[in-house]
Every structure is written in structure tokens, then in C-alpha cells.
Length: 212
Image (tube, rainbow, N blue to C red; front, side, top):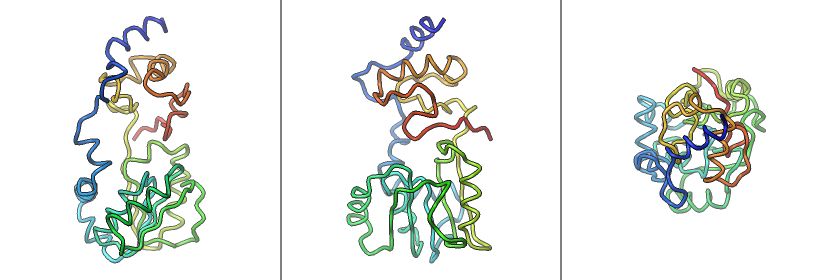
């Protein structure tokens, strides 16, 4: 059955040398600063006014573009953390887009940060929650380091959604995580990614299969 599943899924997948099957607007949100700022404001109503003048933590900041966007939307200080981040690239992006802003980025586990209690006025984690190995611990940690009366902004992909498996860059098949076994999906994925992952939790960024 596994071989048959692989054959079927492969038929619904792009050719290895072709471009990722993703909507251009989705990619733009992650690589274009203006689109990133718009995404924050559309996702969190009144975000600009809420973070204006505040000290903000960006959890799951990737290369730091979202962190810069938060600063440009009015935050006084912004710190970005991620379990994997190119700090040098983050510095280059800051120098290019926001040289006068108070922005820092660090490699850090969101479950166990090095920040003191009540450090930030607000914590933002946009589209990262489904990637945390232990989302409950991340939420507890976010609450610990957020000052009394502060805000925690969270969005998360949902495992049960059509694209919850994050495999639509090679297979435009909704609910692929339910139509095919984990073993089948990861074997076909290995054609497009060489990280050796054999489980959803092992792919770059990880997937915790969290529900609502």
C-alpha cells in the first residue's frame, strides 16, 4: 500500500526541477517587508496603535523581516528569537531597512528563553505556533515574560486544515496528511528536500500536528 500511495502522491506532485507550488502572495508575505507589515495589520486589528511605543518580542522571527516590520509599525524596542536564525543576515536586513531602530535577533528556544519575568509589553508569534515542539510550554513562557496588562498575539496553522501538513510546495493536494500515511508523504517529500526527515516533527521548523 505504501508503494501505491507513493506512486499516487508522486503523480499529484510537481516535477523536482520545477518551481514550488505556492501562491505568490504567500511567499511575498515572508520575503517582502511591505507585505509583512500589511499582513501584521490585517491579521491583528489595530496592531499599529497597540504596539506603538512598546517593547515587543517576536517569537519565530525567521530571518528577522517580521521583527523589522513590527519596529516600523511603531514599537519602541523589538527582539526577535528563533530556534534557527542567520544572525548575520538579520543584521544585514536591519541595516538595510531600519538602521535607526532598536532591533535585536537571537537564536533561542521559545520554551526556555533567557528573559526575566515581565520583560515585554507584548509578545507576537505569527504563523509559528504549529511549529513549536511544545506549544503549551511556549505559551506559558510567553505569559511569564509578558508584563501585567500586556498582550500576546498568536496565529497558528491548524493541522486539520487543507494545507496543515505544509507540503503544498510540491503536492497541491488538500488534506494530504489524512489521505496518505506519514511515511508515504515524507518519502515523496525526500525528492524535494534533502534533510533526511522521516517524521513531520523532523522537517525544518517541525510540525506538532496541533489542532485548534
